[in-house]
Image (cartoon, rainbow, N blue to C red):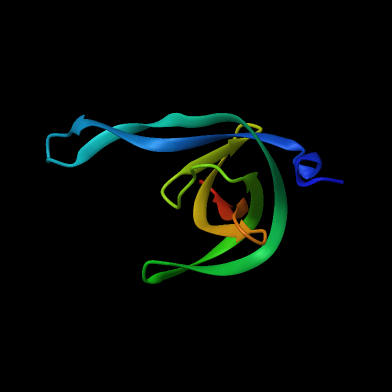
Length: 108
C-alpha cells in the first residue's frame, strides 16, 4: 500500500491573517483558509511532550500530511474540530522531502 492510500482523512490548514490593529495597537485578524481539502491521517499520539518556546506542551495527536506548506503557526481543522500545530517534522526518503508529521493539540 502506498503512502497516499493511508491518508484517510481530509483537512483544512488555516493561517492567521492580520487585518489591522485594535484600539491598543495590537494586531487583529482572522484564521483564513490556507490549504483546503488536503488528504491526511490523524492519529492519537499518546501524549508526547513538545517544547514550544519556554513552555512544555503535551501533543495529543499526530497528523501525517503530504509535503505541503504547513508551519507551527498554523491550525488544522478536521471534522469541525480545530487543532493547534505544535511541531512540524519533515520526513525524507533517500533524496527529498516525502511527507510531514505534525504534532497537534485541540484548541479549547
